[in-house]
Image (cartoon, rainbow, N blue to C red; front, top):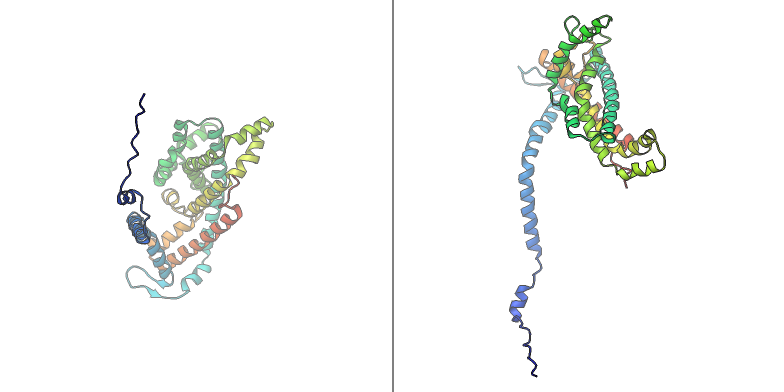
Length: 321
């Protein structure tokens, strides 16, 4: 019996073996790749950066400059220093508008946050139907002006279907938008109706990030739904809730559309919110310098409120391990 001899494994020439081996990249090659990535990133960032500069940064800087001038669009800006700010501090209508705005914000934020949180928890604990979430979001898809006009018709004292129902139930008709007691709460609730679905979906997304096994473990320990809400849901939802509160507070201070199409700041300045007063000073009386000063003051107030909210609610921290 003969044994077949096996041939030795073939070997690549030394040069070929070195060529087949991956060569380490040089510093110059890595620097070239970094520059290429930087250029590509700059291309993608450029449109957003251009929009930021043109529509946000430049108008902000321009507004700060105009706040120190007297300007009416017809003549060049005239530097007046702090005169506009002195006038603002001594303007009773400005302080009344600020008070009306704060009243609106408190009603809007309080009702909207509680309602949105309740809707979000119900969506998460009872049903996660996409159709139901779409229905909840529907009012948010309506423009502020359209929502204001619709509710103006519904709540009209004489012909509105809302007051027709109230009258049919045997109660007196309510002048929702023409009485200084009812006007601001009504406007606040109109905007709650429009925005509560969107706020609820933001909170619902935060609830989805909470691990379900925490609720299962709590149920095994005999915890009730109410106890799980306060011991699990609220602590773990805090960062998302804090961000939502910051967004809604900023948006509430900028209310304008609903007032402009329903009450026009009336009756007797009862709904003359700060944004509407700024608009009237700028485009009604052409006092762009004074309007810019009030806008800068609003910017400072919102920045301070946002900073305090962020620190108190610890929005940048989470209890999820």
